[in-house]
Each structure stands twice: as C-alpha cells, then as structure tokens.
Length: 164
Image (cartoon, rainbow, N blue to C red; front, side, top):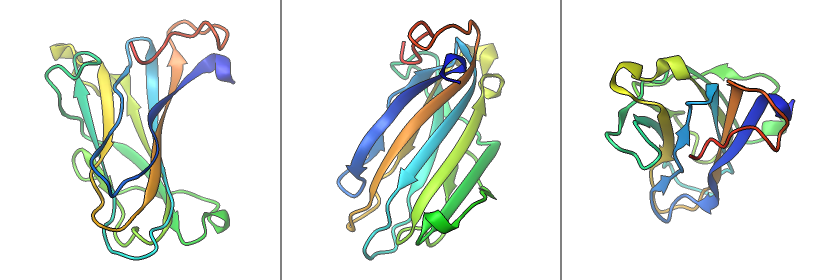
C-alpha cells in the first residue's frame, strides 16, 4: 500500500496550548489526493476546542497563501476513541474545522483535499493545515499528511517527496 502513498509530518506531538501550531507545507504536484489527519489527546480541563485551518499557496514557502475551502471532513471525538468505530461527517466552515465541546475529549479528525480543489488557474499546488493555540490548558496533538494517487507510482523509497 505504501507504494501508492506518501506520508509526511505536519507537526509532531506538541502541547497545543504553548503557541500556534503551524505545520509544514505539502506539494500536490505529484499527488492527486491528500488526507490531513489531526490526532489529539483529551485536555484535563478547559473549554478551548481546537480549530484546524487549511490554506493553499503557490509553493512550499507559502507564497500567496489564501484560504482553501474544506469540502470533505470526518471526525471521531470522544472520551474513549477505542469505542468509536465509525467516523461522523465533519462540519467544516469555509477553511476551518472544529468540533464543539472537544477540548476534554480525544479526537481523530480527517480532512480530504483533492489536487483539483486548489486554485490551479492561479498556480496553487501546495497545502498547509494549522491548529491555533488552544488556550491555557494543555492538549497534546499532532498532524499528519497522507498523500495518495501519486502521478508515478513506484516503490516507497522512490515515491516523490511531498515537501519539495
């Protein structure tokens, strides 16, 4: 299966209450699909729900970045994720996704981006997902990018990087 995908770190597990959590940019020039996977632990207290924001740019340095409307999202949010078998359809708002009352719950949120969703006319081919500072209460979280449908499928060690 890895010959049909690439995996890149958006940001490694961090306390999302210490600052904004800006991820790396990924390039969709060589891939048709992107899954943005946000995974977080429950906060011990507090009400600061995380918000994932998705933007697009013309290169991996973020040139000309602007909002990318989220068309497809799914969530699992609960005190015990091992009891949640199915995803729920997400409720994105323009280029953001949040789940009300999720601060004290664990979560797996997935946003799907197709390369065709980007503003190709203006040369946009890169995507970044960010999670704003969640406030004063510690919440551990991380973000992964899973890129699929490479333009040239090869072995896992030869698939093109998504970071350049």
